[in-house]
Amino acid sequence: MTPLFAASLAIAGGLSQAFQWGAAWSDAAITATRLEKERNRVALTPIGQFDPLKEMALLDDVILTETQGFFQRLLGSGGGPVKTDSKPGGD
Image 1: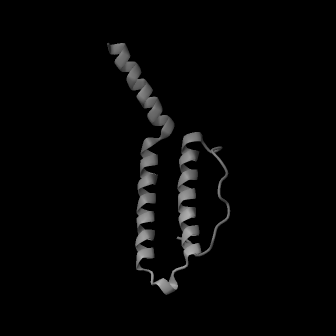
Image 2: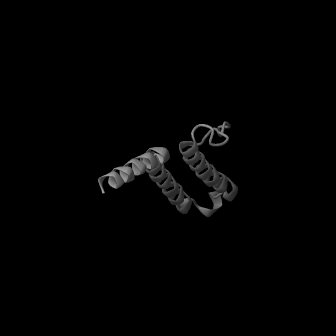
Image 3: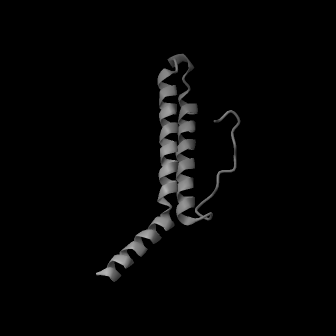
């Protein structure tokens, strides 16, 4: 029974290291907080000042950044193209 338990722990530890669950959880929590902040900002923006195209572009950028970060953690630095264009005025 002890060898099976040891093997199970080794496999679990290897998976934990491979997927970096702590870093993934941390980044997901930060992204969720940022999305909540953006949702609140949009909810309080007067209709006359609301620009749907700008807001969708911002949402797409947040989601794309989180997705790229996840796959780079999962697959290493070669996990896909890295976004190189930076837009002034973003936070």
